[in-house]
Amino acid sequence: MKYEHIIEGTFQSRPNRFIAMVEADGETAKAHVKNTGRCRELFVPDAKIFLQKHDNPNRKTKYSLIGVMKKDVMVNVDSQAPNHVVREWLEAGGIWENPEVIASERTFENSRFDFYMEKENKKAFIEVKGVTLEEDGIARFPDAPTQRGVKHIKELIKCIEEGYEAYIIFVIQMKGIQAFEPNDKRHQEFGDALREAAQAGVHVQAWDCKVEADGLWIDRPIPVIL
Image 1 (cartoon, rainbow, N blue to C red):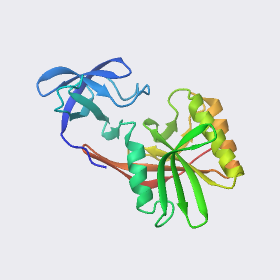
Image 2 (tube, rainbow, N blue to C red):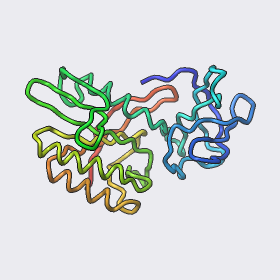
Image 3 (cartoon, one colour):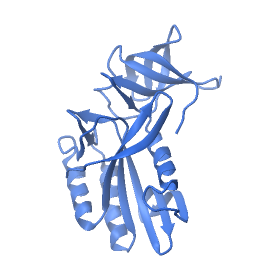
Image 4 (tube, rainbow, N blue to C red):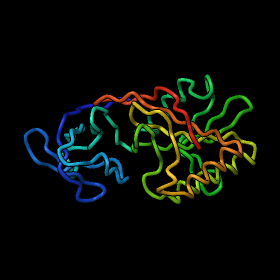
């Protein structure tokens, strides 16, 4: 996926989950943070950031915060981006070549999954999780407890029981990652549910991304350690 109107800036502070104070274009301004996660290891004072500049006068903020440099690694922090890049990847044959149906936001029982696919006699539900937390070369999810994430995993298991294929895809929004692990330290229940799902036949995949200031693309599979 590609962004338009990207400029560089400097991170100053984050008054709340949705707003960051930044320096850009010679001014101090508010930017919309397109990620409600904690991201404490990324949003540090004076960090180099990448902003999308908007010309809409009705917006409350002129900028959206898209990316941040963590040392020499660029990290995309747009929580909407993983779904966009997974759709592009699915359309290009990421799971099945020439899928007949790719539908977004399809409901199964009490969960709405990111994608549903069909090809011939195969049907699959797919849940996507964006990952921005890296510790010593290991990508981890989640960075905060997520009961919604646990619920999705348990219902992916039900998909398997009903004869569907099921996938949970962790999109690591950076390069330089050696492996992916569930973040048991932050949410043990999520890790336990993910291990249960893998044993039940849910496909657990992690992929890193090519990250540029104005773009993001799924690139290579990353080992998953459960």
